[in-house]
Amino acid sequence: MKWTEVLEIAIALSEKHPEQDPTQLNFVDLRNWVLALEEFDDDPRHSGEKVLEAIQQAWIDEVS
Image 1 (cartoon, rainbow, N blue to C red):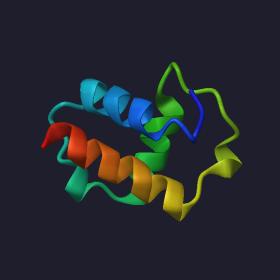
Image 2: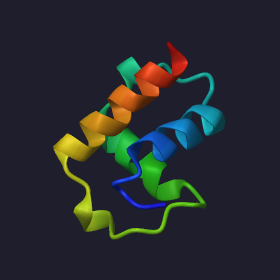
Image 3: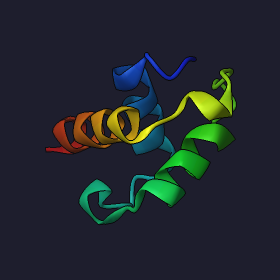
Image 4: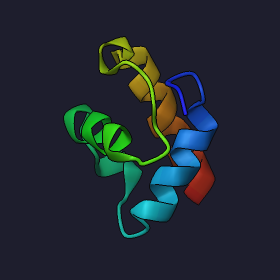
């Protein structure tokens, strides 16, 4: 899984952390959780605020 696979990351996070409200998650924790996903295999330095925002929004959309 790469940073560009925003929806796939959001789905994986919602499955791994079903109790988490994605609207209450800060970007530091979100980035760490993405990096901790077993399926994730991309350069950690390629994450930026826009990518994290997109992942967070996809996660919000997924659980809404």
